Length: 135
Ligand code: RTP
Image (cartoon, rainbow, N blue to C red; front, side, top):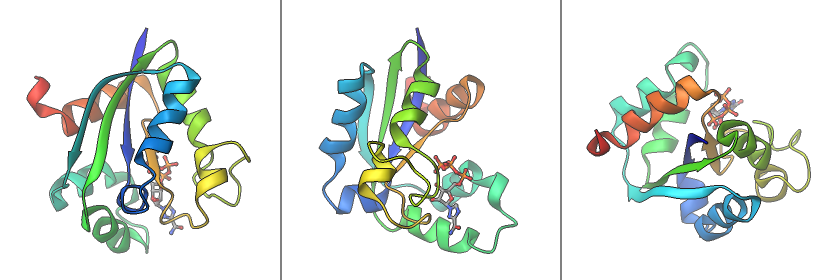
């Protein structure tokens, strides 16, 4: 059993896709272990996307992620990181397979509805980042 951290990004929450997005993970077989609606601080987003800080779209990405609350979730199940990324699809929705969240529900790379951790190690770091209250 492993865990991953998922965010329904501000566009997904504003488009009222939270139930649709979480339902896809649940139907696939991942189980909710924690869930909350939370506004993100700029510093948390800058830390989360530090690997993209030299990209021209970084400022836009940070303002997008802080414009309105996200839904943060911990999902657990066998190979949770890989399974969640398969359900999410490729970063660019134009390259995401039909049937994936981004393939079905998004058009632009900048506003692609959902985030999922990319490794077991990062999942644990991100769980601490977005759920510090869980210790
Ligand atoms: P995420 O971290 O959000 O799950 O996305 P990812 O691993 O699939 O992709 P990553 O390369 O880490 O990119 C993080 C987020 O940056 C935004 N982005 N915008 N305008 C652009 O060309 C562009 N490219 C990336 C997206 O919101 C992407 O999910």
